[in-house]
Length: 524
Image (tube, rainbow, N blue to C red; front, top):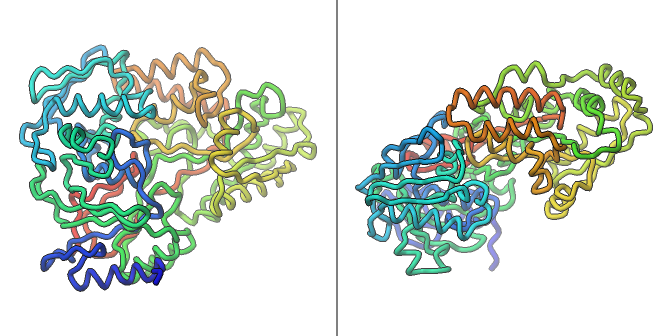
């Protein structure tokens, strides 16, 4: 008999009630109450640091099985704290990062954690993963003067390096386990984290057991089970019925359709955890085009002034997203509040006047708007289409599969597109450098900024500035200059929303990266 996802969830709940895990593993008395079942929409990818490329589910598993040298401190996630590192210092030139390591940590296989393991892990990730070339690739040398000391020397100053060391790609692996399992290490990941890897069934579930010897103290949960349930409606039903404990966002705009959130608001058995994100979604222009209407900044500003931002947030997202005014979200430590006043405001009459000033007849302007696929992106595209119709501009929507969409975007074969960026480290560099440095315009899904030596110099200077207050002031100037050029109409930042049963306590939602740690979580 083929199990439906609905029946599978019911069986999971029944199994837990009988003291048997959903994978058929007997549990001791009381363990079922401390087993946390997390519903995710897709199978995990990149389950080990060496090959991880910011896949959301695999990345979260990594941060629960492995430790990094440093991590963002809960609940505000605005300050880095030590994990495997007790302390650290940065040289005056911003190129040397020295760490004092903990001496009371062992890997899950019983082997000791030390500076050689740090060097081995980072060098291994750099060698295996082209995704980290622009960040960990800056490491010129790693010295290990003693088992509890490690010194990184970079090829150039890069203050965001600490943030990079908090990413899943920088997690520390057991060299002994890598040697033992070789290319199969992804199926036998061994770290120092609060949970140990137990089992993985593709497209079905991942099981992690508590590490009772964890150096920060044993987790309160006995077991984590990530269960794959692709359908949003099924995930919602399983949460309501107690078949799962948590519904994850896992990189989507929302874990369930926003119109279904109302069903949870009055449900005393379910809690809704919300946190601002640093994800930005925008209507962007191909800023490298020298011909056509969008080469004129007045036309770009007119389009930006035609968007009813409040209507979009209220009508499409119903409170599940926040306004974005420029290249950084308002919860970024480098955000400049002055950008709110400089950003284009909804004013269709002024938009039409700007088009007239630019000698553009909106009736003769037809634009193809590229968008990601999916109902939510379709709703955003339709909303923008209606707004631009109000000022006389005709928009054809082209929802495109991601591989084709990315190829078009990188090749520059578009004029206007719905796009976004989800930062995986808590630093303005994650948005500014990749998005707006003109030398990178052909390398990824960027704003394709035209050559601008002055702006490029400011971006690179801010990226390498060691003093954080000076750096923040430099990013303020950069934000204001970018907003003045109107490279996009900045639309919204989706909130990070996690739905959990009411008896789940201690879960705090991180914003960058949007990954949850379960060491401090309990199930009452």
